[in-house]
Length: 74
Image (tube, rainbow, N blue to C red):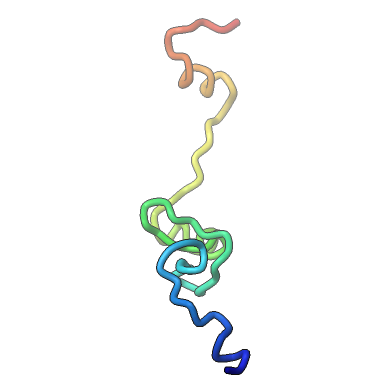
């Protein structure tokens, strides 16, 4: 048995070795949420095409009002 025939010969059905990016087949930095299975580098490139967008609030007052709608901050 040579090294090539033994190396990575066990089937990967679960764990990190079983998953890869559906765009570039990279195994590290995988985003699995919502069943996307896409690495973070490809996600940054394709996020707008998929329908994601950056959401941030205009100022701190709006941020605190959204977190605590019934409180008055001075």
